[in-house]
Every structure is written in structure tokens, then in C-alpha cells.
Length: 467
Ligand code: UDX
Ligand code: ADP
Image (cartoon, rainbow, N blue to C red; front, side, top):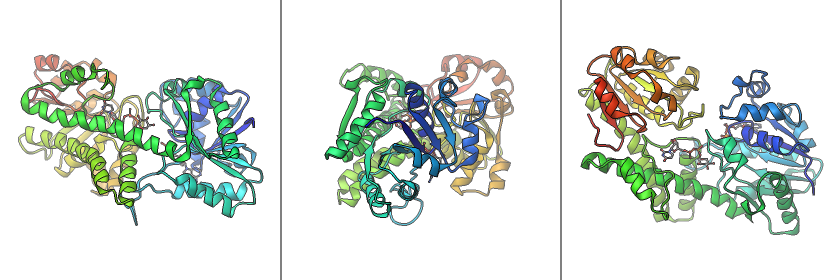
């Protein structure tokens, strides 16, 4: 079976970039990305490519090439489903905030709505591909809905987890380490797998396309993210020991990373990992383990999250204790709000928790982030429900320049590793701050020696350079 028309439900951080690259690399396939969020679709269609809702280096070029040719963004979900041979589900699957599995299990209501919509609309056989990260065995739930509420149409369900990392999405999509496709062992299932393999084969070498059963594919995604997050928590746990002993975490990372069995990636100590996947996927894993009564396994993985929480809290605790045990009425400048550099995504960003802790201590915060707007920052804080939204707006301000954010502040906290932070005129920043002027580098990116020479008192995560 040759795929001619693809529909992707969900025009977010995963669906948008992924389908833009599919369209760019497969000019003979018509790709329509749909979303219930009309303003998001309008932004994807905006002539000004700076207004795309997702910021990713290189994405504008891909969208420019394919949009209007074979890449379309629309709110007409029914039409796109009806036309498509293959439907990707790429909607959000946040952690449940209510009921059974609250705070742990994935909330599948958006997925279920999609499945029901597909079942209602589809008049011909379709291949449905899960792209969102999902708990193991979700495919069978989707299958159930499709088969029992549909119009007698036959569906094949594939799992095709996305491994792109935000900030490098386009690069990751163009040159993936691997593409994973899980499907049914039946003849029909294998045909569906082959149809999707053919799509990727337009630009991905065959040896990088792996096919497995559905559940292996689903579980591999959770496992990959759990392993990556575990490395960050492991190095963060060591960063605390470094600070106590005078060792330097960057030196330790380098030393262990040169061991080819360990490898050098994901060994950067930080104020804590964020992003829409790590915490959610580990919580999913923990929930699955508990469901099967595997409490030891659940506890093992949960510890990765507990260290991450600890890392965020100890960063803000350190700011408070260093500023003479009170930050009340003091201004603290945040450099960075995004969960990592080169993205405008803030989901689960360490900055949110650090800000929340400091606002509880009545600090005033001025935030500068090159790509995150102030409305997003307020939405992140309001979502916590710790303070009224009026209080959040009173205590925290967004600034469009780092110099303005730092002006009259007592301390600067670096929460995201944006490259531009290294290029600032730090003397100028220092001159306009209260003295003593502090820098808390939660990403270990600044030249501490230089800052100390200027007069800053510095803390760098996992290093002996401590105030
Ligand atoms: C992750 C996976 O990498 C990706 O394969 C999956 O598809 C989705 O989840 P993402 O969340 O976009 O991607 O970013 P990633 O680069 O993995 O970083 C996650 C968090 O860990 C960020 O907050 C980052 O700053 C932090 N991190 C990463 C560290 O603190 N230290 C490191 O060494 C690496
Ligand atoms: P991800 O990082 O997984 O891509 P996002 O939140 O960025 O997550 O994107 C998910 C998108 O899915 C959102 O734009 C949301 O509006 C959209 N969405 C959620 N449910 C549906 C639905 N039933 N139909 C269409 N779009 C949906």
C-alpha cells in the first residue's frame, strides 16, 4: 500500500515539526496537520515565519519550502481524517490531575477523543499511528474504540514514538538515530508497518528503521526517556557531593564520559531537567509498575524524579540562604525560563519551581528569556495555584532585555543555558546591580573566573566556585 495522504491530529511541538519534515521529504504525499486550537493553526499559517507557534532552529526553512505545496494546516479535522490513508495522533497526553492515578498516570482523554472522532468520520480503511508518548498498551485501547464504534471500517494501529529533542528537532528528524515502528504481527499489521517504513525510507537509511511489536515500541519510548533522565539525575546527585568536597562536576563528567561504556552525552549537571517528556514518562512507568504490583521497580524509577525535585529546591534554598536568609523585597533576575536552550517550550521547566519557591519567600523576580513571552510565564505560575494571578503579576515581571532584568537586582539566577548569556557585557550588568552582586549559575555555562574578577560573588552548580 502506498500512502498518498497523511493527516496529523495535533499541531504542537511534536506534530508540527515532524509533519513539516515528512512533507518536505515526501513531496508526493499530501500532509495536513489539524488542531482544535484555531489560533495555533493561524500561527502556523502566518506569512511571518517568526510567528510560528513552535520555535525550532531551521523549522522556518522547512515550513517555507513545503507549506502550500504539500503541507497544510487546518482546523477542519473531519475533512482531513476523511481524506487520509494514514492518520497520526500527536495530541498532548499530560499527567492526570484528577481521579485514579492522579499525578502519575497519563491522561488519555485527548487520545480517546481523537479515536472516537476517527471512528465517527472514517469511511475507508485507515492506518492510525500513535505519535504521542503513551503508556504501554494504549494502542489496544485505541483499537478497541475504533473497532467497536466505527462504521465497519478496518483500522491498523501502529506505534511510532518520536525521539526528537526540542531545540534540535529539525536536525533530529532529518538524521534520526533510529525510527521505531511497532505494529501487529498479522499480515495486515505487517502491511501497515511497511507502508510507514516506505514513508520514512524517503530520507532515512533502511538500517535505521526498526520494526517491533506494538508494546515493545511503546515501552521503548518510556525506557529511553527514563534512561536519559536517570543520567541527568545521577550527575545532579554527584553535583551535590562535588559542592561539598571541592570536586568539580564538569571535570567528573568529562572523566567518566570518556569511558566508552558510559559515553559523554547527558552528563551536564543542571538545576534540574524539565520538558514535557521526562517527568511524565517516568511517572507513567512508575504507575505501570505499581499497577503490576512491582513496587521495588516503581520506587527505583521514582527516585530519578525525587532527585530532580531536590535539585530544583536546593537551588532556590541556596539563593535564599546566601542572600542572608531573606529575599523578601529583593529583586532577583532570572536569565532563562525555557526548559532548555533553543526552544520556547516551558513545560516542567526548572525555572517554574525555582520561581515559585522564591516568590513564596516574597522575592521580586524579573525574567528575561530570548524566546518565552511574559504571558506564558504567568500561565505557568498561575497553573501552580500557589498564589493569586494578581500576586504573580505584582511580584514577577517579564523584561525584553537582560540588562533591564538585572538592573537594581541583588542576584542573577541562570535557569536556561542560552548561548547568548555568555556574550553579555557583564561589567555593565554588575555596575547596575545592588552590591554585593550575586550570580547563581544553575547551568554551569558562565565564566566564573571572569565574573569574580568583575566583583560578582558566584555559585556554579556542582563546582567549588561557591559563595
Ligand atoms: C526528550 C528526549 O531527549 C527525546 O528523545 C524525547 O523525544 C522527548 O524527551 P526533550 O525533553 O525535548 O527531549 O529535551 P532533552 O534534550 O532530552 O532535555 C531534557 C531536560 O534535561 C532539559 O531540561 C535539559 O536541560 C536537561 N538536561 C539534559 C540536563 O540537565 N543535562 C543534560 O546533560 C542533558
Ligand atoms: P506535544 O509536545 O506532544 O506536541 P502540544 O501540547 O505541543 O504537545 O501539542 C498538542 C496539540 O494537540 C495541541 O495544539 C492541542 O490543541 C492539540 N489537540 C489536543 N486534543 C486534540 C483533538 N482532540 N483534536 C485536535 N487537536 C487536539
